[in-house]
Length: 265
Ligand SMILES: [Ca+2]
Ligand SMILES: [Ca+2]
Ligand SMILES: [Ca+2]
Ligand SMILES: [Ca+2]
Image 1 (cartoon, rainbow, N blue to C red):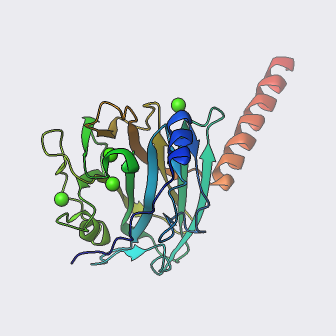
Image 2: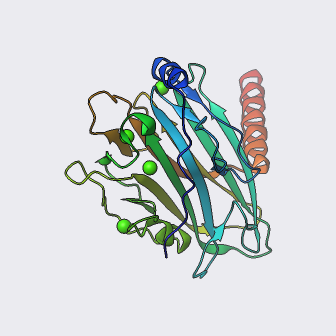
């Protein structure tokens, strides 16, 4: 099924010049669930590097056995899961961290939770279109991690359907020798989440090549006038529970007290 794309917003020459001079990330407001969609007819404003602009950031979350993931821009998390989102821009504004904390609010462990992050960005769309771009991947996927690069589903790509199904195909369908409209997705599956436990999914969008974990996708433009590269990477982890951290600190304190007592004795 094809998706709709809004008409390209016309940009006046002076704003293009400004965009070309500016670097760094100028993130625009996210929804509470950590998604973003450029308003129809609005000029691009969520900037990455000199010429990159985010069109859409979507997130999907699938619970145990779900055939379709919840699309978090418009749907609540699956039953038994709670979501908290935060975005953190590095001090030099070159890296934007998206942090999705997913907590098991059910009474029983939940097995097989998959989180998918989908990013559609364009590089110098007004200079050379959004479909003269390609992606390259580097490094090795972590256990439980998967990826996909494809046209975002307005023409031929199946990435958005795969993200919705929480089943990415692990292929780059827009490599350097077949440039088109690039979109990127990363997915992480957590084998089991105990009651009260929180899984943390962190995604990084970088304009200077920084990455999280051992795997990264880099979006580029074939036009030598467009040197912007957008690097997308991520990682998943289990957040240590405050209770266990406190217990651990208490245990260390007790041990130190016993050592002191032993020395005195
Ligand atoms: Ca950086
Ligand atoms: Ca382009
Ligand atoms: Ca695909
Ligand atoms: Ca794109």
